[in-house]
Each structure stands twice: as C-alpha cells, then as structure tokens.
Image 1 (cartoon, rainbow, N blue to C red):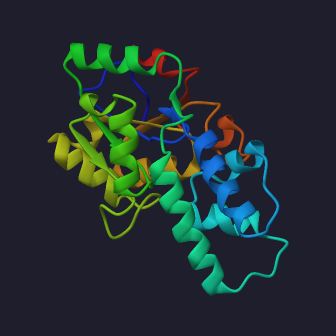
Image 2: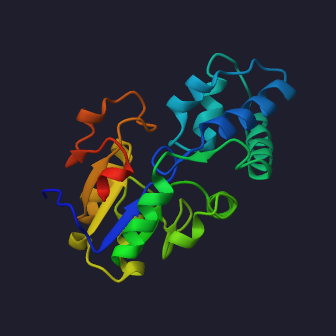
Amino acid sequence: MPYKQDYPGYLFDLDGTLVDTAPDINAALNHVLVHSGYASVSESLTRHWVGHGARACLTQALEHNEVPEHLIDEMLASFLERYHAHVADLSTPYPGVVETLQTLLDRGAKLGVVTNKHSNLTTKLLDELGLARFFACTICGDSTAHPKPAADPTLLACQKLDLPPADVLFVGDSTTDVASARAAGCAIVCVPEGYNHDVPATQLGADAIIDSLQDLV
C-alpha cells in the first residue's frame, strides 16, 4: 500500500516514535539492578532493549548472571514500581512532535496511540507530558489479548477512531510496528532514530522513512 500525504486518521507508536523514554527506563532499571547487587547498564544498551517489554529489558541486563526466576519476578515488580513513580522525569517528546500533532488535529485528523507499554504507565506518561489531549484513543499492551506485532491493537484503534484501516497511517519505529500495521491493513511510515533493535530503518519494511514527524504535515 503506497504512502500518501494526507490521512483521516493517524496511529502512533509511543516509545521511540513520540517520546524518548529510554532515559527513565534506564534509570529505573539501574536502580533495581544496583539495589539487587548487580552491575548497572548503559543507556545505549537499554535503547536496544526497549520495545520488547519490561521483563525482556531486565533479562537482557542480567544475561550473564544466573538469577532464579522468582528473583527476576521480584526485581521486575520493583522495576515497574520505580518506573511508574518516575515515568516522565527525563523522558521528552521528540522535536516537532507537539507541533505536528496539533497541526494534524487542526486539519481534522483523528489521532491515536498504539503501544505495547502497559496502560498504567502509558496513561501517566502521556498525562505528565501533556500529550493525552491529542489522542482520541490509546491502545496499550494490555488492551487486547495479543499485542503488537499482532493486528489486534491496531484494528481496535481503527475501530475506536471509527475509520477503516485503509484510511489510517501508522507511524512507528520498528518491525513490530510494521508487522502490526501490515496485518491490520494500514499503511506505515517509520522514523529512523527510534528503538528499532539495530535493524536499519531502510530494512524495517515500511512504506516510507520520514526524517521526523514534521514530515507528516
């Protein structure tokens, strides 16, 4: 499906597309690691792990340690508690995001978020950054039985926007986003500097690569 310039609806991935969340995720991860007696990890490493879920981040950080499953569960709970309390301390929208969202709204487009982040984290992050007002729907990792890369969350978002998938452009940063959009029947564009797990943007399979969200307007 070719990408065109103007759509009635737009769906946005959150982490790595709308907001640079890695600094707060890294801070919460290192808080838990250090308090549990393990070495901290660099933010650059955390950026590679974002998008696969909190457990995956923690498991990657503990890759070279033999940690019993029950301790990982305890550390995960601590990580989520810490991250929820500091979800927007260091996270910021990418340049041009606020202006682009406002322009799209002024144009009459309907906007939504489709993320694998848990709903309590997503809601707080969007509220604290003042972004919630832009979106008619927010679909999270716990909103459907099958999160991205399944079609379910993207289809639910289209339903909430009351638009057919062909009238909706998905904007993301990873193969997870591309797979979900494709399965749902949406066109998709990707930003190049998000959390794409070391896959070059040109190899994500999107209809187009945009330099920033400002290219949408």
